[in-house]
Amino acid sequence: MRGLLIVSLFLAATLSQKMFSGDQVLRIKAKDEKQLQVLRNLEDSEYLKVDFWQAPARPSLPMDMRVPFSNLKAVKNYLNSSGILYTVMIEDIQVLLDEERKGMTASRRLERSTSSFRYNSYHTLEEIYTWMDNFVVEHSNLVSKFMIGQTFEKRPIFVLKFSTGNRTRPAIWIDSGIHAREWITQATGVWTAMKIATDYGEEPVLTKILNHMDIFLEVVTNPDGFAYTHSMNHLWRKNRAINSNSTCKGVDPNRNWDSGFGGVGSSSNPCSETYHGPFPHSEPEVASVANFIQKHKHFKVLISIHSYSQMLLYPCGYRKEPTPDNEELSRSQGSGSPLPSAWNRVHLWKNHQHHLYGQRDHYRLGL
Image (cartoon, rainbow, N blue to C red; front, side, top):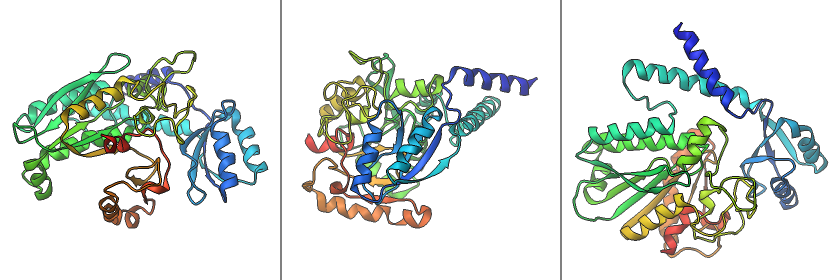
């Protein structure tokens, strides 16, 4: 009977979700700038509806692209006619999504039976918010929670504050989950909060930091989009804003910042996954954070956690001129040095090598 209940819950969740049966993910390599431009044109095509997970940036780097089943033949013909090589990286993405959903259902059952939060599993927005409440109670001597604003759909935007002092001190900002479908980032935010709370007083470096600085952690930066990935469309990326004069919903919050707004790497098309919105800070999810950072005035570090690209990026990606503290930022390359040997997938890009506009990691430099 219990097994039947789990299957029923899984089927109910699956039936309400958008399906991606037969959709494939292709790994592509462009040999030169000409082929790169062909891929950029493909990215801008509304007809073929491809979804770049790793966007066209430069010929030496692989690009990953989800192609709807209905357009597979047309896209592959397009690539072949342009002499662009590709391999099928994921044969059927729905198979992986179904496996992930089953794992979440089993994990939720185990959590209910043991009354314990599983940090190695994905959780819904409601589950994360409930965890926050319990987490703050358990670590009330170190952690507090407050709301900095509301989303487009009027959900609260919460921030956790880790502090050992009563006065305003220099601070570190960390956020995760600005792109809704990057579930590993919200999970990383939850895990990071747990590690900060449990390692304080035990781990020397963290303890020293918290004895002199505060840490602010926004675990779910895009609550509306994140909730939508669980209820309707697992691969939704943007927020859920209604765009005027368009049937397409959502703005990419990570392209909405007042930092090189509207440049290369963002789109003015509301149907695009990188739509930057009508103007800088038009989105409440972005404006709430920007206002909070401006009011605090003591932030020394801003860190935004993303997934998939295997890169450590620092400002500014929208201009070639070095930042005033470029030398110090360049020295941070050492922090990525152990990673390639472990994963063989990590790239560290300097500010002049990657062109992205309107992103949060650039915003602090303009204040």
